[in-house]
Image (cartoon, rainbow, N blue to C red; front, side, top):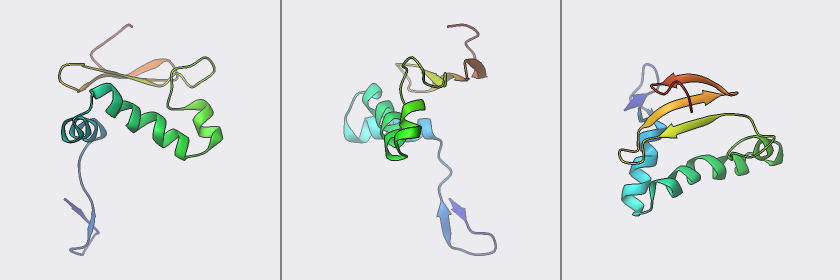
Length: 93
């Protein structure tokens, strides 16, 4: 639990996005790939046309930002930003 400095006021929770996605899949009884879609394409769309044009999908002309997920565990194995690996244990796609 995270509180505002010097108070007992709740400011948020210390949970990672991949954990939230796994929770969504489990609690809503939906496939992991659908939960990932809800955590990527849906927020990009809600941020407007310019963001949706660049983020949330793997299409020609979009930013080359991707996460490689383990399909069994739902953990992020590798993260790529602008086509370069910035996190993970995969060194090539």
